[in-house]
Image 1 (tube, rainbow, N blue to C red):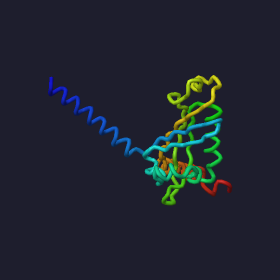
Image 2 (cartoon, helix red, strand yellow; image 1 turned 45 degrees about the vertical axis):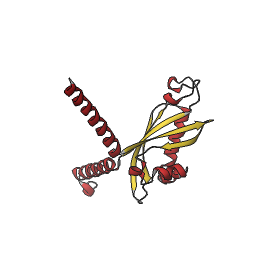
Image 3 (cartoon, rainbow, N blue to C red; image 1 turned 180 degrees about the vertical axis):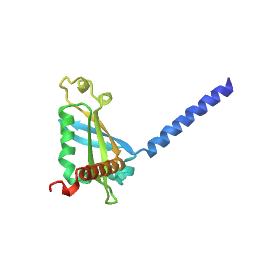
Image 4 (cartoon, rainbow, N blue to C red; image 1 turned 120 degrees about the vertical axis):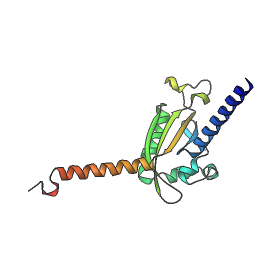
Length: 173
């Protein structure tokens, strides 16, 4: 019996260690946004942001405009439109867009926003779409650059294959 308890305890410890290791090495991180009077007023980034953005947790915590500046200029209208959509329609929303990594490279991320009912104040229950005011939402940012690169390469190859299958530049003769 004692041996079984030690074995189960060891498995639990190993499982916790696995989860912690997996979380620390995963290509994603979470953040939470506080909304007051319909306007996001605070964003709390979680550990892991540095792996994806190159910026430390401290940099995000001391510079409230940092996220805005690292979103690729061409993608800003979509990204900030999604934040407005979240406030108007508190449901899960996902968007893929580019950010500028601290090292100067462009990275692709997938950002999923979800209302945070566990942190809602008593009169606010947007998960039932009753018209309450959203107070909090959470996000998960996942680095997807490798996947986007592979997708782009496959698309390029398929276009090239289709081009040659249809006679290439000689098709109009």
